[in-house]
Image 1 (cartoon, one colour):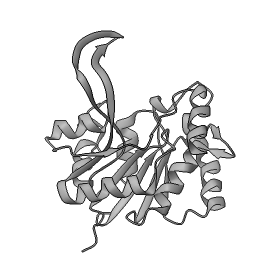
Image 2 (cartoon, one colour):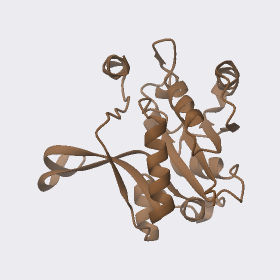
Image 3 (cartoon, helix red, strand yellow):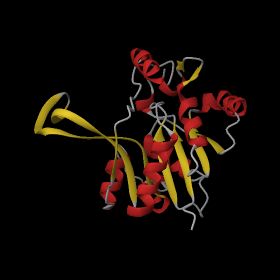
Image 4 (cartoon, helix red, strand yellow):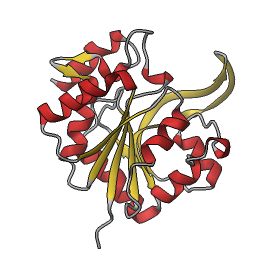
Length: 225
């Protein structure tokens, strides 16, 4: 039986901005915006049945033109929203049909995502209720607050990346349509843990670098080539 799965590509939010002038997903990487690479990967993934992309309002026309130029047939809706992640997630989820069981969430600032990684997180979620791409981290890990180390953990660990696939029902609980019922979760991992969802990791050895500054473009481009 088909597990109906849609992609939710997030290209808005405070973390997506590297300056007051431009958001990371709209920096140019080689000959196209960073966002284009994630959309293309989701469009190519056989396990993704539809795509919703959430963007800033001022980017609506350029993203529509990009979708048409690249022939991204699986994109069903371009949603405009603000910088607050919980609201942007709620706005995106509102446009995913009720018969969709699973939603694969991805941050567009990670352009190296592959169709295979998307598929693996989806299949893990179908079996276990969630699927989160994760990479091994060598060396000691710490938690910090305001750049001050709070806890030193054991050598090595896992860094949670994206994409991350969850049930649509769980995401709607975490990000309800009503603003008064919505909590300000830092990310989807925190939101799912608050719901008691068991998180299942999908290990990867393929780099999934996140672009957080203009200086990150060169190493990402080098890996792509």
